[in-house]
Length: 142
Image 1: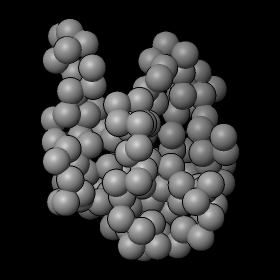
Image 2: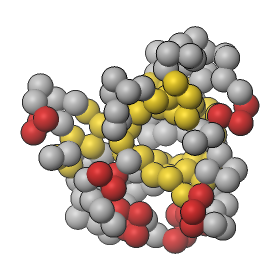
Image 3: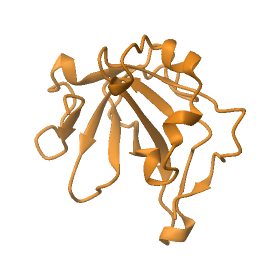
């Protein structure tokens, strides 16, 4: 996956190749100034990944592919949201949810109500609100 880098090899900001950067032109909810991120992978936190802000070292999020929690999650995202990031090929779509890890697995949650959607073909993303869904911003992961 082009969008992912390993944490071990890219621990300092500024060494990511331009094609590994994901751009969120609108920023993320509560972080409108953070517009460029890199997706970091590590066996130590799998299946989670870290979405690290390229502009600010102090901003990073633990994210998870929402299909680990809801199998048909991508179908819950309206087509208009995918089109808003220029998606033409459904194979180029990715989605992640920001997670909070609790003291126990049962207390760990993901924000399935406001997923991050990414067009892998152009490395553009957007955080969307699924207002027509019954999913929660604190959806249990197990």
